[in-house]
Image (cartoon, rainbow, N blue to C red; front, side, top):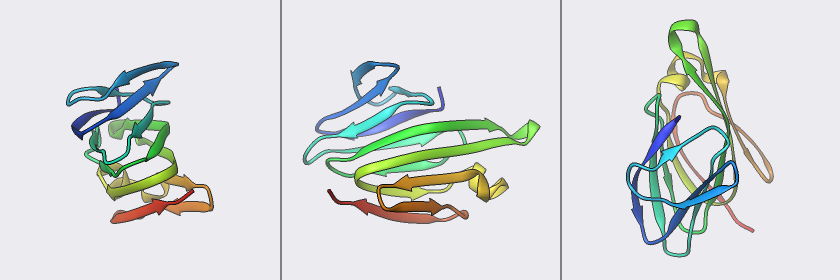
Length: 123
């Protein structure tokens, strides 16, 4: 796994390799996972490098690539938010190799440079 669900309010799911589960604290997140929150829902996730992702209602987010092997300088995190809102707090990958992080939205790409930001994607 590349991370864990820390908290959920109302309804959220994690889909990996065609299998969708109801998210709850401790649900594992993997490369390729699609995280989705329902109306009036939220979910918090912590990745292995201590990146913190906080999702608002009606969000769809995918972890496309995640590589965290700092001893071998293998670091990468690419993701996509197709709708909803996300509060992002950088972890170790952004501190060691900021250009290894890329987040795609329907209208552009966010290059993370070791920071915290909020993104909202409307349909």
